[in-house]
Image (cartoon, rainbow, N blue to C red; front, side):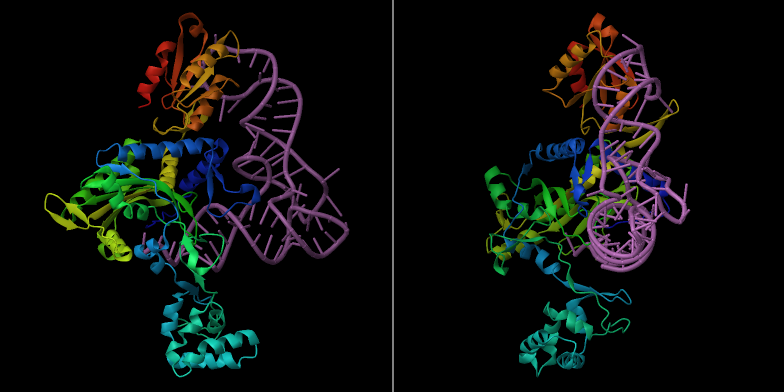
Length: 501
RNA sequence: GCGGGCAUAACUCAGUUGGUAGAGUGUCAGCUUCCCAAGCUGAAUGUCGCGGGUUCGAGUCCCGUUGCCCGCUCCA
């Protein structure tokens, strides 16, 4: 999750702006709830966008589940609250944080509380009790909460833990770094998980979360899938789905959003074979992007240094793409060891061990995770495809998608709107439509229609012309080279299916 | 969360010291058109992001708010 910024790159930044503008105009991406002023960090996929996204997911799904050793899964977004305790998400992301307005230092509230001496806490308490600017109701609350700790200032942490009292207590507290008194922002929880309630009543006991990652749905189903599919180690479980993180900041168009889609595959291996499979998937996953036409020189691995690893990981690598704003993570490959299954065994009380027939041993498998961002890949494929070039003094904008990813596979165009050409073109459209996403366009000069398709990334245009009337052939115009060949109408589907592979 | 910039038609933008909202592109209808966006004719579209305020009068000035972009912070 690192993010390198490339400075002084106005030109490159322009490309994001151009792509965002094109994305809206052509119907790839719209801002969520735009007519109401937009919703921070949320985006909608339009007609072309949803096709591109679907194609990316489909290629990923094939790359994964068409293997004999990977099974598919689609787990619920809502999961038992204990899952997030076991995963560490509850523990690691519920800390209220505050900033000193003066020196901008940021503190976890409990750590700030620890940094204040017991004597000082007692002083704060006295100040609060005597203060004339505090409402009687809050004073009563202070007395009620602190009465049990009158003899023991150490327990006065409660002043900072209670959400009603914390702002009052902070007003009497000095910043440990700069010493300024009471200049803190209001405490806010930085837990990244979206909360909601199961059932109609909003109360503490029924709090549940929107999943912040899809991985846990796979972990808790490990033995279900293994048993049902009769897979033996090593094998994987693949899943595509939405995940939600209540990010503090959203950023860079689709790069950091609060709602996003993941394409995750968790590969379960013998503990001794973890390094081997980590390397295997690292290599395999990079190839996925280059096979779909992404520029190899804009892709790289970014290994996480050993001392910066997440609590669950033994080793980790990101596959990064060189976005116009710098290198950014598209996919993470992690060796999660036996951490996740071990924790779920501990928290659920259900054994998560796998019985290895060969060695006659029972053990918790290690997990190699490949976790790709569908939304981020979408953005990378879109930006990577974007090209501007000069053709006869004109600027041509063309999206050079790999044919497998192109939203529209072919456009059918009558050269002119007469002499029976539209009728023939309509017939071709009807014949192709059951097999391919095609588009019919007869409006304006043919050159203009070609350019419209270039902007949509359509790899082929089929043009019905005078010669068609004579010999039943059509012009097949290729997007990138703009070259034209003639193809018999009868052979069109076969030729296209071959070219689009 | 902090600091800075921006917000006018679908897109890119203009709009002088406050005085009835514009251009280009695109879109649509018709004509024209035999291969790479600029032919002809016509048409539609904006409570100038939203909410207040100042003023006889606000796209323009002030305050707030939302969104986008940049930097910092954050990103198990």
